[in-house]
Length: 183
Image (cartoon, rainbow, N blue to C red; front, top):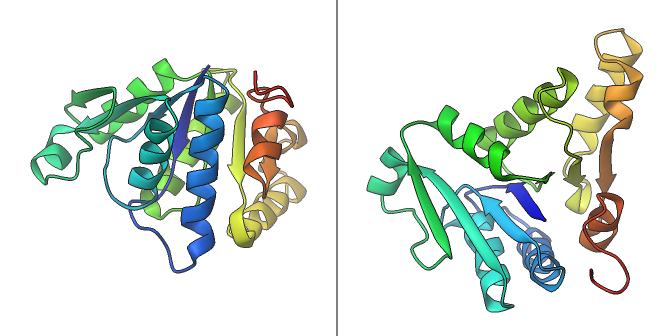
């Protein structure tokens, strides 16, 4: 499977964020899944990609040309695709992906997650989507989604289709990517 992961270009303030990215990378490689991500060598993105590669996995990065020129691209990955814009980046990652996961991150991660959730709601994709809720990072976002549902702005089925876990192995299992045997 090709798993698209949205995550921060920073490592965050707690060591658990980096450790979770490393753990997820190990499990992606172990399950013979290909990582699809934003192509960066910095922050959680770089940690995740390095963990997949270190454990024998395949990594495809998609990066806009302007970020490539800022020298944040990871040139050691299996394949690096350069696109013209952030929108094209999101579209290409979605085209390549069989499932999506969001790790902690900032505006970019939130933007990518919101867009892919919207595409799922509109029926443009049917792929599973998950939140790796490391250290309770997404607790307030999930609570806001519940308010959106309670107040009639989000259908129960849309919220229910989002898989949420604080454990990489549990989330990958929920998404159908990983089993006890690692297949």
